[in-house]
Each structure stands twice: as structure tokens, then as C-alpha cells.
Image (tube, rainbow, N blue to C red; front, side, top):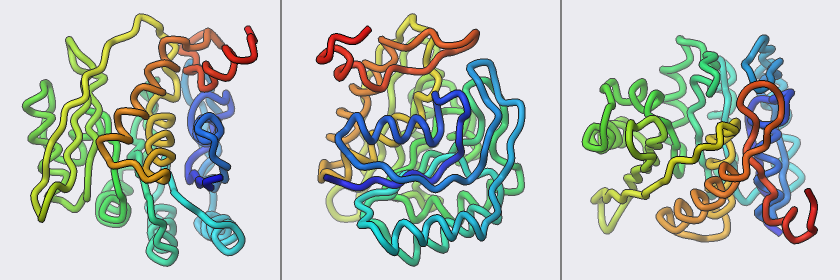
Length: 271
């Protein structure tokens, strides 16, 4: 069994963050471990409070896991402050995980800002270059590239800039495109050349999409840890999340979570 570690914030409603990551790991047959960077008071309608964890405690959690358990892949999600980002980057340089997926969580689906402005520079300079893959949405892609993004051509341009700034590979998610929901992967090809690949995505009428980005990056970490190539991992992770969105759960009064265990529930005939 593969062992996957998530380093992210806790979502009290269970739909995103650490909780979504652990559910995704389990759905992929992996053993999940967690390092909590922040505790959020959060539900399906928004985030009402955030308590960041002390960087020393974040480091201690990472040491506790790596010193005892084999880690086959790491996913990093919500890291709100510069000191926490620097602490995580230091430990990733120390332990050098084979697979490191960074989801640069800056703004929640509800619109709540989760990354402090002065932490953006450390995120770009400290964590992004260490990642096997980063998974920004269009809004985050604009921050990382400094470009405005409205269409597929601008997505390609932004991805190229993000790689020029240090990312090894980037999956720029197109969920905010007007007519489609296609994602663009820019990744190392033969030699030093970067190659791009588009992945088509269909829009779903189900409004229950809470935790989509967290779950996608966690699924990618699982598939990459299993030895799949970047394009293969994206194909499988997108299919998993698309199924979860199609069967999204009407939990709460806002945007409910995706369904992480559709196949398990079908097999067990659970409702």
C-alpha cells in the first residue's frame, strides 16, 4: 500500500482541505497521513475564521511522519503565511519526496482569501520550484504569471510564464472558462523541451463542487506515486473528480462537497 501525506488546512465541514485529501487517498487505495497548517471555521457557505498553526509545530508534524513512516508522495494545499511556507519548503528540501504536488490555494471557492498577500512571494520562490507539479486555477494562474487569463490561448501563455519562473510542470485548470472547462498541462518532454497537452472537461449542472481542487491535486499525487506519467495521472485524476462532481452531495445550505466514494457506495449499495 502506498503512503500519501497531505500538508494543508482543516475544513470543519469536511468537504475540502485535509478532510478531502484523506478521503481521496482512501478512495485510491492509499494510506493517508496529514500535517495541519491551519484550522478553518468553514462550511458550505464560506470561511468565517482561520487559525494558523505555528511553523515549529508544522515542522514537528512533518518530522514525526517522515521519521517513522515511508512517504511515497506529498500533496501541499493551504499554506497561509510566509513562515509556514518557508518551514515546509525547508523540510521538503530535507526529505526530498519522490512526488510533490502543490495546489497553490489562494482563494476558496466561496471567494474567501486563504493566502496572505506577503506570502505569495515565498510560495513562488520557495515551494513552486520543488514541486513535481503545481495545479493553479485561472485566478491563481494570473497571480503566479502576472498575466490576465480569459481564454485558452492566454492559459497557454500563462503556463509558459509560470514554468519560466521555476515550476517543473503546471496543470492550469480552466474551470472558470466561459464555454468549456478544459485544463492545460505543460510538462517536460524529451530533452529540455516543454510540451503542452489539453484535457477536455464537461461542465456539470451539479452545484455541489466544494473541495474540487483539493481532491484533484490529491488524486494526482496518488496516481503519480503509482508511477503514472504526468498526462496519464491527469487523465485518471480528472475522471475521478468529474465522477465526484456529477454525484456531488447536497450537504448544507451552500455548495456541498463532491462525492469521494461513489464507486464504493455503488458496490455496497449504500444510499
